[in-house]
Length: 158
Image 1 (cartoon, rainbow, N blue to C red):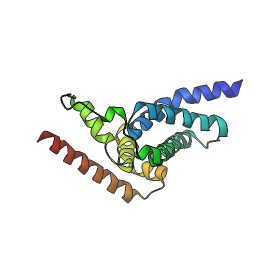
Image 2: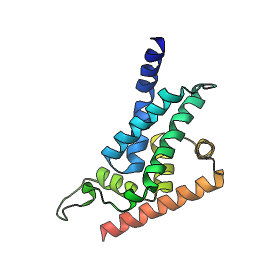
Image 3: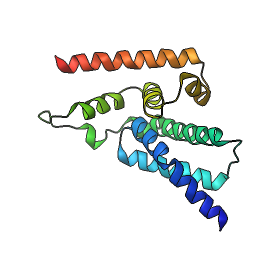
């Protein structure tokens, strides 16, 4: 019984982090819901042990990113277009949703670093460790993501 309570506590503690990361990288609610379930099913199934709280949070972020990457790279996914991507050209968005849409339109590797840096408030060093990439790679991805966002914002203003 104590394992269930423990799992419930873990889910409560990390649900926001997992869901926000899944939503920002997968671009839509349905995929984020699927990723959310998959991450916590893996936690319950494999019962990983952690050295400390930082290691636990890193595990949840890493598994979430891996699940997003798997979903994003699937052949079926590449050939489909989500309904929310089909927009009425007369719709107006406030700046928050416009920026969110622009972030969601970035390639996966840029969405992930933007989310981890700005929304999860992780340092470049922490992101590099989680994604198993060099810090210079993360800095480059952040720079390129910001440049793409800036260019797309300028295009929208024209």
